[in-house]
Length: 167
Image (cartoon, rainbow, N blue to C red; front, side, top):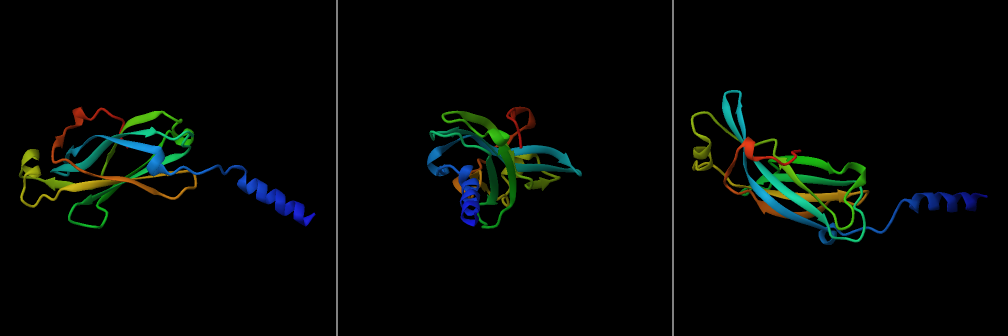
């Protein structure tokens, strides 16, 4: 009886587990746009934050269920995270094999502020440090996988130009 319970517990444990997919091979990231999003005036100061817009294509032969994306923004001169954005892609349905999802826009929660310069002047300030974004993906119980690193272009993206869904 005990042996039967162990076998049944093992079967239940592995019933929901299928073969894993290497996201570096099974998921294609296409960067649509990067730049500095104009958040407007907050507490009397203009705020610009790094932003990335991308699409995801499932190039594997299986559905990528419960897919999650984490975007880590860093200044190019620093190792520490500067800002981040997290999102679930299609909730529990994921992305079907061969399907493309997006465009998806992720903005950092942190950026630069200024009160006495125009937005364009902020981008050209001598103290301005460029940024990059690292995208990580995770589906199901698989560990986070680094999908790529992309530079943030030093250009202004105004609110009316950003038409993609934001996270």
